[in-house]
Length: 242
Image 1: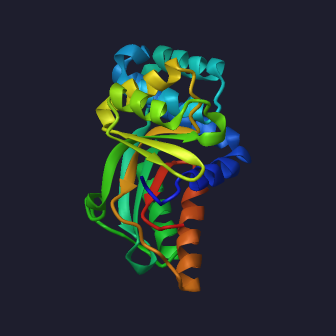
Image 2 (image 1 turned 90 degrees about the vertical axis):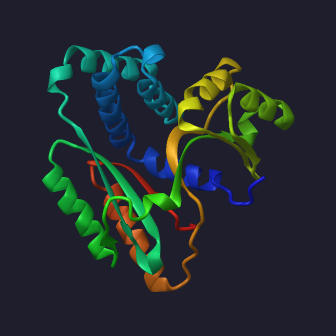
């Protein structure tokens, strides 16, 4: 059982996102377009698309919006010109940051990401410089208040479906899976009508870094805020213990 509460961060992230839900839906729409282009419009035969749909549902994206995005991408696939760009670097006090982008202009995106790091007194590094500090995992967060199933039953359901680990936090349950087992576990939970606060394949830090100096706290928040404001940035992973 983990003592590091992740649901508080999820709730904080969702509260911020609610103020800019249109941006979140646009970001997920890009991910849908790329997933359809790479693997086709049928989520049962396209695990990447199935994972993006799960993420969309966890962010309360309406089903008809999801369906429209899939149909548009399937009928307009040749015009989907987003490419994946990943940047790794360091924030204050050696904190590790990974930035995943979908962009139609890599030069613009690279300049914007570099600017965010620079303004927060951080630095861009080479590919692989910090990713070894993270593990790629399927992560499902369930709000305890929204879950009627007993914790032991929920754990057995998840483990039987292929989950690697089950953690109980003060206000939530966390289910971790290997990336290729994520969709099967998520589908098993969905079949039992279990509401998921978050469901995605993510990068989890192996260790967290605590910052105490006011300058460091201000700088890492500046980096994260600038990245959050960038339309090309899809995900930001870091090992700062907020």
